[in-house]
Length: 514
Image 1 (cartoon, rainbow, N blue to C red):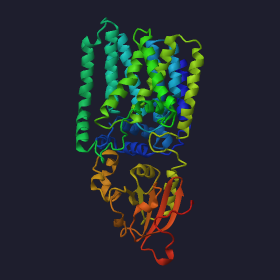
Image 2 (image 1 turned 45 degrees about the horizontal axis):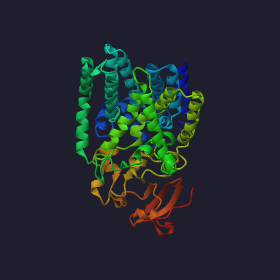
Image 3 (image 1 turned 90 degrees about the vertical axis):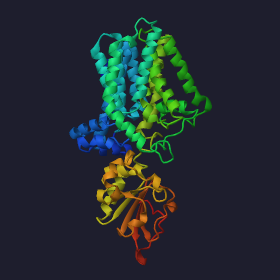
Image 4 (image 1 turned 30 degrees about the horizontal axis):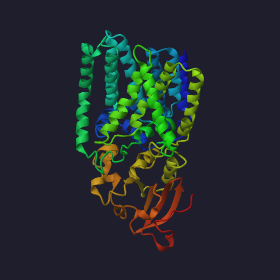
């Protein structure tokens, strides 16, 4: 009954304001991918940087509930809420119901978990499979002779691998936990000597080999680390990366603007609590060690690998955030501190500003999702209503293209332009990554040189987020005859070879807000 209340709490927190953010580029990409015929999803996903399982599941979900913003995000709400309850069940299995309940409540309010339970991407599904695999692993550890739990564990791990490639780091933490149990238990139970463990992992490898081949072909087909590579947007790892990650879990920004002592105080406190959770944990199966490893093994591994391949992305590591409340709860109970309820309620209150930031779209994980700053639905409606069938519409920036198409820009008239495509041929789409969905229509959609539109249309609509319009460097034959400002977005209407009486403004100026 209590876990049901935790589930309802998590659903309510994650459902509030679900339709408020605009559908940003990655979400629109997910929807467009999942609207493909079922048999084509795997083909196009093989050119993307993520495995296909989420797209298949979203395809089925949209077949029942539709493809609106709230409908597609509701899947993540459900999966993220189930993951909250799953975490509580894991802690309850290893410790007691009180710790499990408090962990469930704290994770229900965990800002980064709320944030990615409101997004139509694979992160909530990934967290669900992370927790499900942990639960089955614990059940098997408690009953090593049970093949049913181990079979379920293998199934969930395979689902992990087909959801996100960071599943590998989750698996590392599982192995590290079993090593810890063997060492801490003095060899009383050596799980690595059990044939069933190796058989289960062999099945996992065999079931992932087909997509592993696809993955190897994908990452060998294009530049990963170069300036025009697939991950050139990924930040470089620095000394501040770890504390910034912890602050991102709690307040949805990197904390770089905080006082020095506060910025570094959080990771120091977390390290101290982790030591307490491991050393003072009296539970037989070491719940503290399990979640400390779940937090640090993926993060440390990614930090080390990031010196060779850029992969330090907060949302990719969001799954490890659920370990933070668990480590805190376990350490508080391990210390036997008085006033536990008051302390834990205070921790809930501490998380509320972060939840508020989610509702206000005040995070720096991706591009802003604030529909006031970027009213893409309004832009698509206005341009769609004012443009005629012979006009051309140019969206400058791939991050806006899928979103504007989701909101209804006419498909046959809309083109995509990036400012560096004209001069730098190596930066143009190569059929991989987020623009791979446009490969079948690349000749119609990709615009490398705006001059080519001069003979294709009389009116050209230009949608951009750039603030310095003088840098557009558009053809001299184009004359700006109208302009709109939508939050931080600009829409300009150009006429090719306009007669003198229509000359209203230079092409680099933007008109008043309409």
